[in-house]
Length: 449
Image (cartoon, rainbow, N blue to C red; front, side):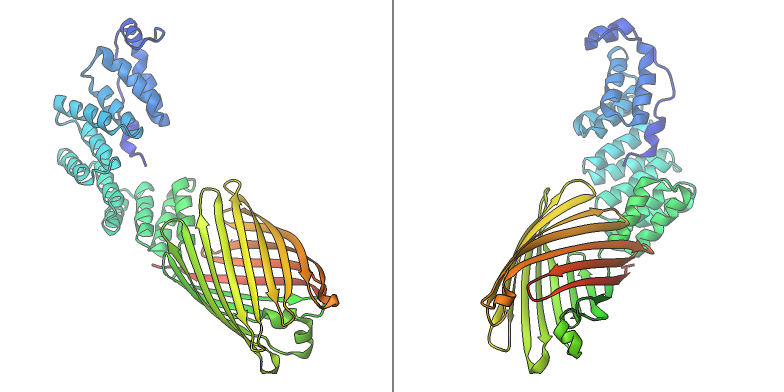
């Protein structure tokens, strides 16, 4: 983030020899008195290379021009040319040690290059020259934030927000520091206050979305729906989860979908409730590991255990996922499921994910494969996805042998910032059973404060 002081570094015209500037840089003759205007326009636009070039022309004929030295030093800092930036700014301060613009610009160059202690020293020296300098005060707050001292930064930004209540920038700073500290609720409040001052401020909008999506202290999801083709309507799923840390999620889940999807169970009112417990752990920056254990109660005193592990590798392409689920049955057989998929990030909003499933189920050891493609369009406030696929079941039972088809659509909408509404419709056709299912759910999220 570039400090506000940079936009008013240049307020005078500098006259130099056009011919000398053109010869020195090997360019077509251009009036040197136009360079300050050109430099100021480039600085206003944030165009570092253009600003550096214009200031260099001025400095060819006027090597001690303070405005040009400070301007070129700042432009070089934008381009991460730290040594060049610091050299220009130190040269300006050697000419005029009391130059506030040079001292503040040097502080930012130090901070951007990771020299936080030196940056803070220069900002303090700037405040000794001008105790009310907002640019220096902002520099101190940013230095604390960039150095990872989030609580210190938040307090400094809050003090600035009190001193300059019409400026949204300190409030954005509060939001950044609070969110970096894991205080999503307080960060959202700060971003909302910034947007109340300037509703078009993009960093505040993005920050507010990031606060809403920050891993929640607690999440409660409840789903219900109905199944046609012999199924029934009712409560499908309840999940209580917590991000115990921003990298670790645990959950307990109740799933009654099988009772309502299976026509035989639905007609007889029999239950096939499943209870799960699981954990998701982020390892490093690119890997997610998931483990889940479940227990399913079945009619006639039978039951089934469920063990699932899954790994996801995150890359620039998207996410590569693979998993296995093993489910021993009390009747002596074991269901097995293997799956793997690749999420392809097509652009900022659009992704496509093909997944292949291989399963062996039932006492007759039916083998099934499916290939499903899922495309999703996602924004900060909603997502819409459609999946379609098919496969085949190979069974010793002729009635169970044949092709399978599945198609489904998902939608999710942000509600009240923190929470979400979900919708799903699924059509599945298999040799022994075909159905259409309609589901709706809601997720309530409790943020960290």
